[in-house]
Image (cartoon, rainbow over the protein chains, first blue to last red):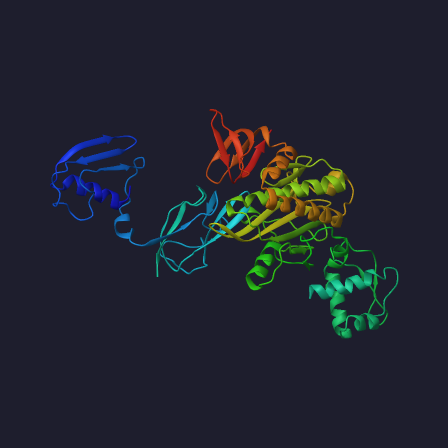
Length: 153
Length: 327
């Protein structure tokens, strides 16, 4: 669950409108809130329309990363084009291609994804600062998985 | 430079038993006498045995086993693979040279092959080195521009293993096995490795370079790898023709590659499965960087990943890793 979703829930629960129905499923985390329809007009802009239900199917429990609050703005994510293993460096003894805080340009090699001895050099699609590295060295990654968060310049 | 050396060597090869006057060679190649003498020295450094001096004439002592484009080209049976050849007596790594070509030249044609008599920095997975002995092995890289999505690209590395398997069985009569994903084994030991590189966007392959190293005529291997590595010569007890294997491979690989582009990867999966004793029912241990997975192999999935049934019965699909032990 990201910050925006969390905020929406807080808005719903703390708004002055009456809550008609509240359904909460715990382990799979399913939250369902229904408000009464006779308080139109008092809504804060952006909140869910009255009379409708807001259903949020949330991911299994994972602590919301605190940094997400300030960085969710317009980060660009470099994603994996194939299923494979993520490598931050050319070999276990060499320096990583990039580290958090580094500036990368469009075309800078940021990591290697390997599948079946096919080494896929991943280049940054944008110019900016590496804010987060989302995968650990040597970990398997899925197709389309986010690898790096870049704050664009 | 290498192209000039190839021309000189080819000229000497056409006059095997006789000494060719330095005067004539220099004239034919339109170079000065001192340049010619320097090139002859270069060839000698590369292991070619040449007798004589500029004023006595030069003579080849024996027919060298050098993969000259002049010898390969007339015998090619392909329309694409190997049509454009770069030949080196020595190069850092053929994959690295191919990548440099692609970075700096606009008109690199598909099927371009970079071939080297020896590599000074032959590479393996995770920065491991590949022992590249002069004139004993085949060390080459192929440039491809597949139109398939990047997620299917690893299948081309299986295709290379299949093609090499067929090429070697046909030209040597040896019984070859494939260890997942693309190591070739003979008598249970590795003699061929395939390491590939790709540049891709999410839905488009910009280029792919498939690098192949084959131990063909090594008489011995360094002691640190001799326990698990071998050569075709050691396995068959005779010298094998590198050029025959190469020509067979080019033809076989081109056929598989073109069929993939036309009809998809089914045949690759089928052939790999029928060539490899690792495909199913084999108890193995594999390391994928963080985990050790032990179980029994259950074939490949549609992307070429190895299915392993673990002890509890659950199925793992492995996309990368080293098969470290097997029964």
